[in-house]
Image (cartoon, rainbow, N blue to C red; front, side):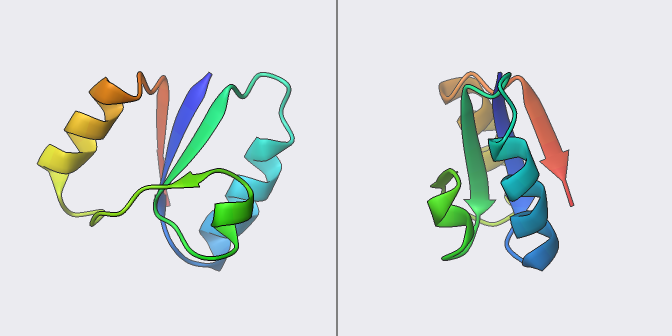
Length: 69
């Protein structure tokens, strides 16, 4: 499963940590992410308010689930 996690704070890092432990996870993308989330998945530059960019990312990366924190 490919997951996109939207956000860049401590809560997002906690979610990324737990998601990265799942055997079902194929790839974790975090937008925009931070230094801590970089160690758990792939940070993607962009704004959580740029819906066109989010849509493009979801389609390009074949995201199965988007988590908004």
